[in-house]
Image (tube, rainbow, N blue to C red; front, side, top):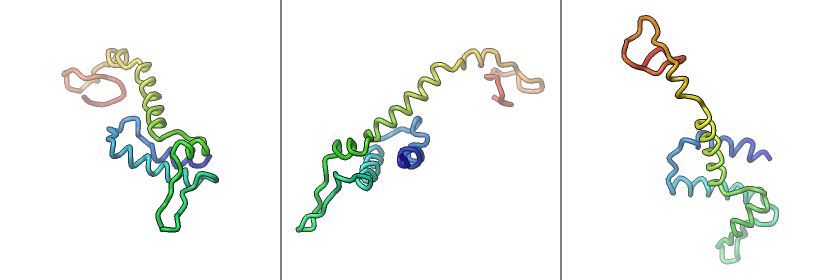
Length: 116
């Protein structure tokens, strides 16, 4: 599905580290829901004779398209990065760091960087 592979991937780029406020989550969810309305065949918003709109229930639209709420996808991305951090042997990497010749003798965590 193009939406999940491209649009949602760009929309949520870096969301693993976002401080996601309720207002920002509501905005993302609104975009996500509007996109699902465009993709839906059955559960579409319709305009009434009095020029007001009737919107289908969100769970029905998401189920028709086969998507989850945007908060679900953000949480999945956060869990993925959390598993990576937990399993990354960063402490061993830091302990094994050596001070490069000509650098300050103060303590720093070694590796591929050239400084503190």
